[in-house]
Length: 239
Ligand code: IPE
Ligand code: IPE
Ligand code: MG
Image (cartoon, rainbow, N blue to C red; front, side, top):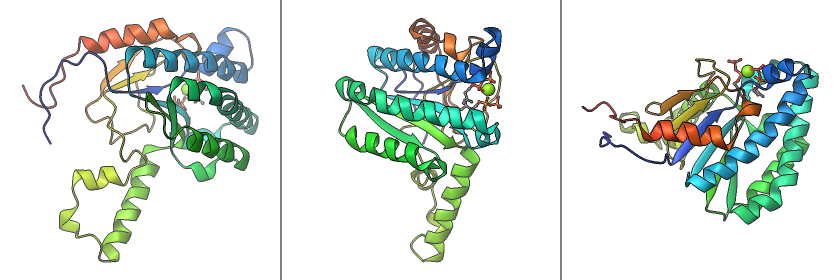
């Protein structure tokens, strides 16, 4: 469906590829895990800034399906960190009106992390100020493949006519069903790539890449990015 040309002030949905923790650690002569720990402060600041600016959905790419290939020690460290953050921030999420959600292969996560996550998702499901969506064991191609499998099953069972498959049908089978597409995609640490993140959903997102490493990305950097977004003209293929 064609959208009207718009100059929107604040993006409804911001998605962030939080990259550069390892390089930050290296720069400070610290182990990689210290970089991930330092990144936690940025998450907190950006969540608060998103609320402050009136962003309604914030998706954070925290762990990709490909990231399981990293050394076991780093993966375990990241999982431990994740579990700690969810547990320690749960009360705050309640107070701030944050609804926690996830996209990705939740079944891949260690039991302890998954249980903590599911409890937090349940506890915050009525909150309406900000949807905080964590992409965990997320891969866009895996997501699209799973959607194809589900659609294929529905066709096979006679529940879906292949000629009636619409763009909305595909969207409805993605992890993000019910979540509007990101308007604004931020990637930190300067890498000019998407790394298997929301390939379908970012079709018309405005892209912002900053050289700032994720642990150095705070509320000022977020405000700067939003300012840049406000100056963009989104045309959606129109003129
Ligand atoms: C991003 O930082 C965090 C995760 C992928 C979990 P990196 O760990 O990728 O940091 P760099 O890219 O090595 O600097
Ligand atoms: C993308 O960062 C994934 C996350 C931020 C979780 P990576 O560091 O894993 O991506 P590449 O290796 O630079 O493509
Ligand atoms: Mg990286």
